[in-house]
Length: 194
Picture 1 (cartoon, rainbow, N blue to C red):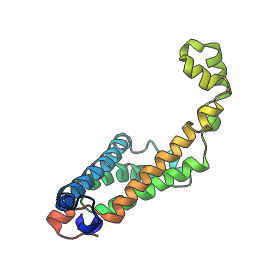
Picture 2 (spheres, helix red, strand yellow; picture 1 turned 90 degrees about the horizontal axis):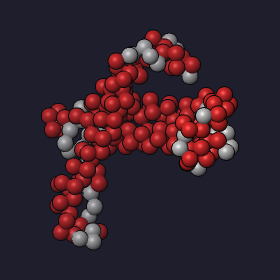
Picture 3 (cartoon, rainbow, N blue to C red; picture 1 turned 60 degrees about the horizontal axis):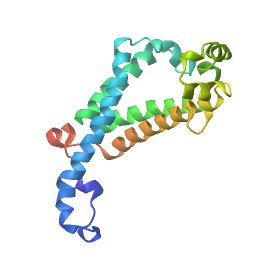
Picture 4 (tube, rainbow, N blue to C red; picture 1 turned 120 degrees about the vertical axis):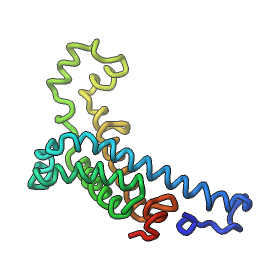
């Protein structure tokens, strides 16, 4: 990846490391990044591949109809898009498709906060009656304010869902922008990239 992230020798504090950065650290770092991002997409997609119609109702609920088409498409993009990113084949299109799916996930988390869908008043009442189900820290976090801080506080579940979706969207978008890098099928075998 020296052509993407090249740092002139004279700008380095340790100029003697320039060839190490260019020939090892940057390409191997990019490969590791690609494997982690693509591998986790595959892991997330595997459960969807096993049950390709499981998301049909959900995708229709957020406006992607028909569910019988978009649910298997989601499974396909998650799993096979991740596989293509890992091996670095058709890397940019696969990463772009993944970024669009993840951008939709981010949009969903922002526009559909967890709220009562995650913690119902009945559930809080049950936990108040059965406090032994929670640790003391869990009791303080959930029962003192009915779970409001748990959901929306600075370390709340809602914010974490939004940040996680944004992180994965950014990771996929970076791969879409920079391609597979030096250690990819695109570069090593095809000698061409999208």
